[in-house]
Length: 250
Image (cartoon, rainbow, N blue to C red):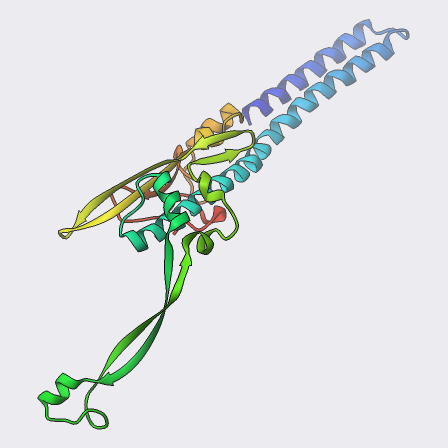
């Protein structure tokens, strides 16, 4: 907005000066020349004003595309790590171990059925017959139906999981930083995971002034701070710091 205000002031002043000069020195022979010059100056400043107005709009449009790409990578990492934890009990410490897990491990497909069965011990204690008139208890019957590969379950025919360590933005790649740890809560250890992508790198090559403003934003519909973050090393959470317009953050 500051640039726009400067361009408008300069345009008004310059047109005023040129008009004054035109009135003093213009003759029938050079009147056309001065008219063309005035139109050129007006056109140049009009173009600069247009660019000043459109620059933030173009920045936001490009930013949205890049952030969506980065968040999509975060969501791939999240579902892969959740699968790893469901089988291994912890998070994969490296991308190599996570990729190997996806390619080699399988989910067990189980059927769970709720049912009621006679409570033999209780019926015996009260001298009751099992069945009608006696006590029943709820049980869950679990039956294995087979196995399905993690890769087919999560990524089907795609092999994008092999590049979870980087985000491809146009003609360059942004590294993804991933750390694991654990915390103690009520004498019990819980695994933690932190994944980060630098916003500076994601928005590389874009307007520096607008980039600095972007890093200082604090709003519920924006990615606040200078990093895109998934999870935490100090808390048991896999929440992302991005708004839901980019993808689920829960």
